[in-house]
Image (cartoon, rainbow, N blue to C red):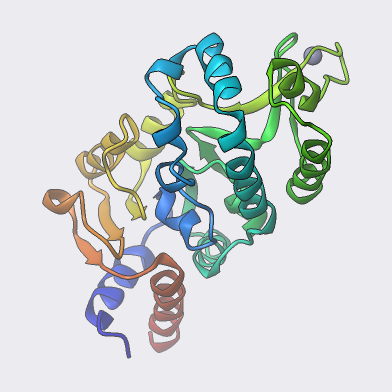
Length: 274
Ligand SMILES: [Zn+2]
């Protein structure tokens, strides 16, 4: 019995009558799979000012100036992204989809783990690091995460100077028009993706699971308020804080990888008992 048993029962009761639950997941969910958040990625932004690096030209200039510091950080990041596996929270979200409860996962995470866990209706507001987008024709391709990471790791070993041409040499080329492809992730100064689909999903929801998100990154932080206006029950799972205090129906201060499997089990128990 968890200390938060009452909250888990309440969350299960909300979800068991839902057919259109929407998830909003943030960095905390990926952190449970050992993906570092950008703020604590080896102090990357202590070395490089993200405001000054706002344009591509500035970004490349700063990359060159900081190449010595950047390479080990890049290696650590690649290592984390390459080794990560979906955690029990990701798996429980796929269980909820198979049970006909969960409809859409909206995520700020770029690590592809919701897709690898099995969920099929996913909106990636900040893009996906393992999806490439052609700068010529716009063609998109999803890569195999682990083999892509090991390819880049091998190429990095042969690069001594991390300058513009070295970075370009790491890029893949489009199979249709052979232009350079870039990771389909939202960088500083770029707009988030699929904004209207995200708001639509929140407005159509009958419950929302708000998972491991700080609530300070807009426009994503508006979505629970949209869901609440539409009458959805709001369940927040976050071991650190509840930034949506005013609109929350159930708050569970646990890791998502512990709370979500317990909620799935409780839904099954309630179904079995009735
Ligand atoms: Zn192309």
